[in-house]
Image 1 (cartoon, rainbow, N blue to C red):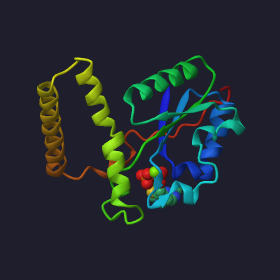
Image 2 (cartoon, rainbow, N blue to C red; image 1 turned 60 degrees about the horizontal axis):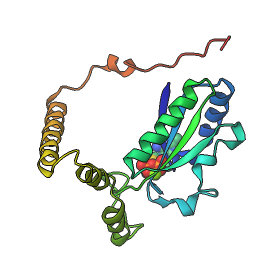
Image 3 (cartoon, rainbow, N blue to C red; image 1 turned 180 degrees about the horizontal axis):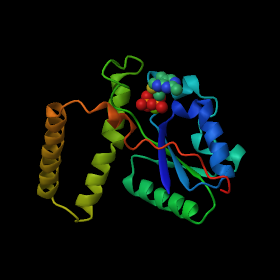
Length: 190
Ligand SMILES: Cc1ncc(C[n+]2csc(CCOP(=O)(O)OP(=O)(O)O)c2C)c(N)n1
Ligand SMILES: [Mg+2]
């Protein structure tokens, strides 16, 4: 069972459809997760994409799919479970279009001038995924404000420690280029 992730911009590339074809032909147990954050680098989806319902992109290959509110953790879990059950039953691949939003630019060199601050703020205020799950946890009595603060603190420490470890570690050996790189041929009888 494999999950493969790519963006709305990547979803417009030709090799995605070659991959869909072979994955469907070989009934591979793969969930294609399309993270639709509405921008491909600085290009808004409406400027680049003829059919924006990316979850339907597998139709030509017989691959079912569905769109999911990516800002709703429980909806994502439910859709993920459904997709996994589909793949594990031997029916081949499944597409999940996760509808989300990118708060920051594509990279450090992207000042995000192609959209307004108000647009970004509106999503933060109204749809933020972390705030949503926080509300669910508090409302359901699963955690207190203090519990959540403690988790935040713990996570910040883990991230800081990982960043320090990365900065202090030596450059990896060239031989590491091949570590975990797998490019095996599919057996003839598959
Ligand atoms: C094969 C290939 N073509 C083009 C690029 C240049 N490129 C890098 S990111 C990007 C846009 C990706 O958009 P999306 O998949 O939506 O990712 P996001 O910007 O949301 O992170 C492009 C065209 C690339 N890295 N590889
Ligand atoms: Mg994108």
